[in-house]
Length: 82
Image (cartoon, rainbow, N blue to C red):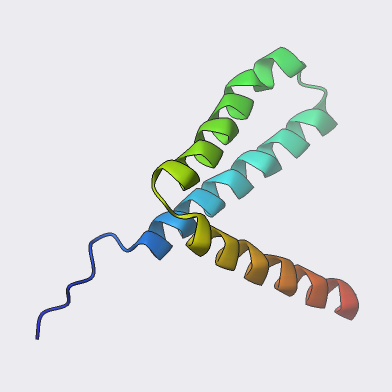
């Protein structure tokens, strides 16, 4: 029986959005440490806002919430080990 799951799967899209958001956040942190002017970061901030809106527009809120919950759980366990 053929797979009726739409391609790409919504979980994959939510995971991609979370990945891009993470990379942008890391870039923001490095930029702040390097003293890059805030005006230079505005495109990144607009991108972050667009990604947040996309989660709702693409109806990915449940998948996104599940992914971020798992991510937070992993970070919590990592902090315990350190």
